[in-house]
Image (cartoon, rainbow, N blue to C red; front, side, top):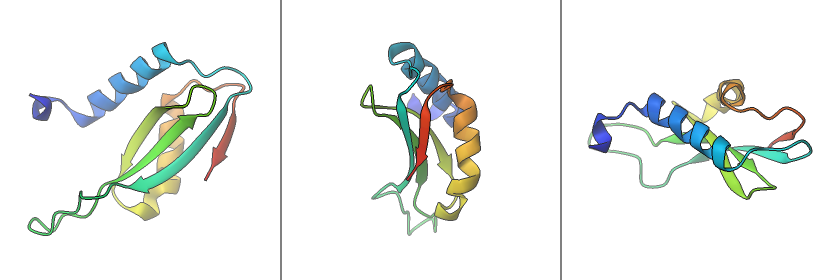
Length: 96
């Protein structure tokens, strides 16, 4: 069933749900960081590992949004895309 859901649509729904549950407030620190997910490299299909860029709310202690990048070097280009998904006006954004 999960395989039938569009990854982009799931990402959008997740971000909206997290926003409803944990709204970032003015003065909150949002840490932006990229990580490579362990165990996602598929040698048989010659498919590289999955890289994600996430936004973490320090006040709420949860990830409030994330986007997938094709390569680790694309993290910088993924950050503006991630920030467009979030309403973080008045927050301090830190890129780690």
